[in-house]
Image: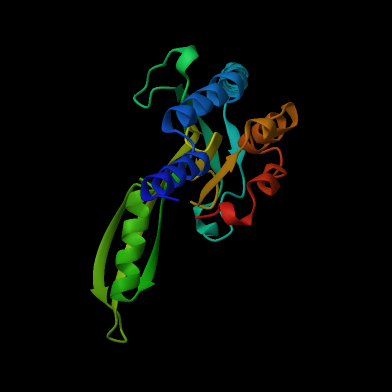
Length: 223
């Protein structure tokens, strides 16, 4: 076999092993149009119907928001807003790539706690900033001579819930930020996983009826 024949064989083998980028793009777009987009549209319709009912029913009482920080105490959930363009408006239904739900958890007054250690205090400060928690902080040296930081937190938290199309992997990602325990949850689902049962469990978790939906999110969803 001559060198040119050998190179041709290698090129043909590579073409077979690595799909053409154009073919990949077509498959991804087909998957989006046929499977992901209808599910995103159904999620949006479900949330819009839910918000219509919640607007008439009033606020939701959240008795045990945090097990890790019980001093937060009871809160009220309300003030829902939805957008699909990331800035407060709505994208075309034929090009729905994200659904953002934002609401508030509100309580009375403030509460304080202390974190010991300079690094631990700075990490807690970064964490609270990332979660957009309204608070004040001060650094001091405690009675054992250890640098510490005191945090005074407003019982007023913004919750973010987002469905986002993972176009490259043909999945829909779901994010929860601050829905409970000031924790973040993230998980990806295929179009086939987003069923009527999925949406029913999601809504029940959202309005604090039960936590069955957390089993779908899984332990690795916490970050």
